[in-house]
Length: 388
Image (cartoon, rainbow, N blue to C red; front, side, top):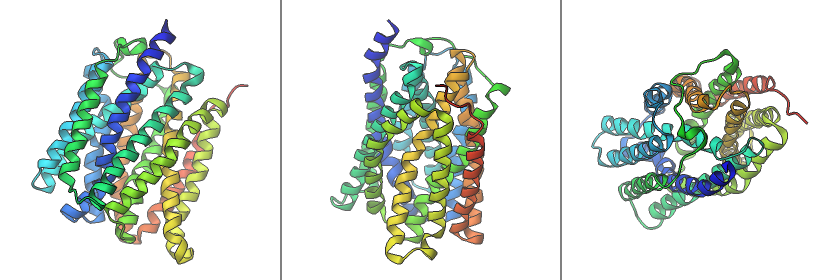
C-alpha cells in the first residue's frame, strides 16, 4: 500500500517541482544582471544583499518550528505562494531597499520549499532507491531551469523583453506550482506531527557537512557568475545562454549522480565531489593569468557547468541523515536545522568574499574556496563506508 501511494503521488510532486524550477530559472538566471543593470551594485554591495537574502535560511528552523503540527503539503503551498509574491514585489519596487525587502520575502518561500521538497522525496522513495528519486527531481529542476534561462536568453537577447514582463511570468508559474501541490494526497511522515526542534550530537557530522557546503555554495552562486559578469563582461543574454547549457548538461548527468549515491554510498561520492571542487577553484583562480587567452572563457564556462551539476550531490547529506535518524518525525526538522546552520555560515561568506575580492583580487576568493574543499574532503572521509 505504501508503494502504491508513492507511485501515485510522485508524478504530481515532480510536476510541481518542474513548474517552480521554470519560475526560479527565469528569476535566478537574471538576478545578478538585474541588480547590476538596475542598481549598478559593487561587489561589496552585492555581497551585503546576498547576506540579507540568505537570512531566511538561517532562521529556517525557527520559521518551521511553530508549524510542526501542520501537514507538510499545506506548508509547501504557502511557501510557493510566498515566493510568487516576492517576485511580484520586486517587479513593483522603486528602489534598492524595497527590492531587497521583497527579495527577502521571496527567499523565505524558496528556503521553505528547499526543505520540504527533500522531505517529500524521502517520503516518496524507498531507502535503497532514494538517490534515484533525488536524481530525477534534480534532473527535472535542470529542465525547468533550461526553460527559464531560455526565456531570458531569447526574450531579452532576441525579442526585446524587459525584466518586468519575464518576472510577472515567473510569479505566475510559482503560483501555479502551489496550486498543483493541492492535488497531492499526503502519506508517510508528511501526514504526522513533527518535532519542533532537533539538535543531537549524533548528527554532528551531518551539521559539519552543512557548514562547509554553506561556504562553498554561496561563494560559487554569487561570485562565480560575478566573475563572468564583472571581469569578463558577460551580459544577461550570455549568462542565460550559459545557464541553458549548464542545465541541459545537468538534465542528463544528475540522474546518474543520484544513482552513484545509491551504488557507492555517500562517503565515496562526497569525497569525489570535494576533489572536483579543488580543480574548479584552481581554474577560476588561475585561468586569466596562467591559461592561453583562447582557453580562458571556455575553461571558466566548463567550470561553471561542472560545479552547477555537482551542487546536486548535496542530496547525499539528506540520504545520509535518513540512514542515521532515530525516527521519521525528526527528518524534516533535522533538514531545516542543517539548512539553518548552512545559512548561518553562508550569510557571512559573501561579505567576507566581497572584502577579499576588493582587497586582494577575485582570484583569492577561489583560493580560499579550495581550502574549504579540502576541509569538505576530510569531513566526508569520516562518513561510514557503504556496506556490501
